[in-house]
Length: 87
Image (cartoon, rainbow, N blue to C red):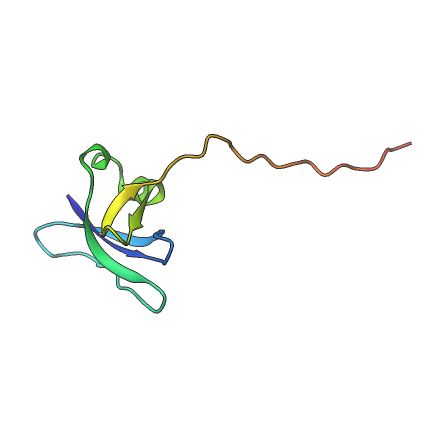
């Protein structure tokens, strides 16, 4: 399975489409500041939907391949704004 993806300098996938044999359907095109390419989807990731695949992977431009993003061990939490003491 392959995808055609448009990505930015950091490798973040901005648009993608699954490449199939019939050549039908929309194909994303690169614009200023982005690049496009066709990439093989790793076997372990082929059952993910396109949205999940794009949000959990990025493009390694140097190796010209799709790679899974590393997950951070810490989750960001929002601090509550402290309000002054109420009398």
